[in-house]
Image (cartoon, helix red, strand yellow):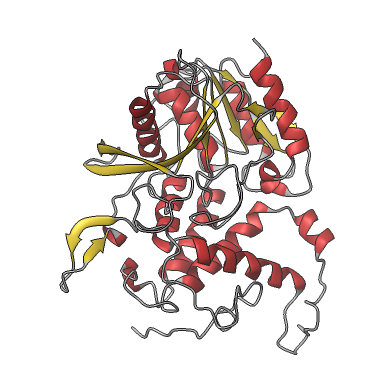
Length: 402
């Protein structure tokens, strides 16, 4: 296998956002022990049993806002999406490559008011921002005596395994029951599993822009993303962590992000924003230049390659594909019938990844769920990260209703 190192982000096809002239992309954008912790806290949870058998020793990274009441009944759990993390509020800075992704929804006086609620946001099992994942040290060493990351040896995990870790973290913090469990996309999948696996531990749930069971269409999009990473010649079967900057599988990871981002935005938004226009100063008609929308996708590819890990992307995507609340429970309807929490099901009307009819089916089968609350947006799936003026009041009203 030939391993070729590009000289820079631009040479790797990341013309959209080279952060500095000549900067090489690290083999992995994972947070590692020794990096600035930022606002992370850490809890060693010990061995966690996995749905497919076996167990893994887990350290969980998390962030908190607000104060836990003496009665411990004011806790809110926020479950992040595929490439999100625990940093839902706050600026970018040491340890946090990006600013908070739900800053307008959480804080003093915000819809989830941290003057009233204690907000807990864990990093997900299998991720790359502090919780045990493929980039974490496995306790083994390689032939050169170097501590060996899990890499491709990381176990197959499911959404239910991720929830088991979050429940163990809640136990560690002395939280028996959450006032609200909320999350979008893959986070919404964990919200549903919380309400089914531990129905007495959640008072309210808000699954947003998600589904009760991954469909063939969603799995197909995910398969293309995973294939892009695995077919990068610098992936090295998942053992790329000791490669120098520039030698990691960032081209495959970037392609995966471009495929995914196409599903995150609506056709109408892309057409209205870019149309078939050429990127400024470039000629796509036989001149080797790009269309503006291609430059936009490459911009997002470059950003993700600098802050994420290719093995984590595969691990989390496979967990997402496995999502089926009805597995081993008699089907989706029987599983959702277990839910005791009051439920606010939210859909984005232009979402082409998790379709509105899936939210309607979810709400219809969930006891305690009212009509689907729609976010009207041209942005598609990403509307749950953008349309704060609509999402905020819906969440506030839901929390304030007795």
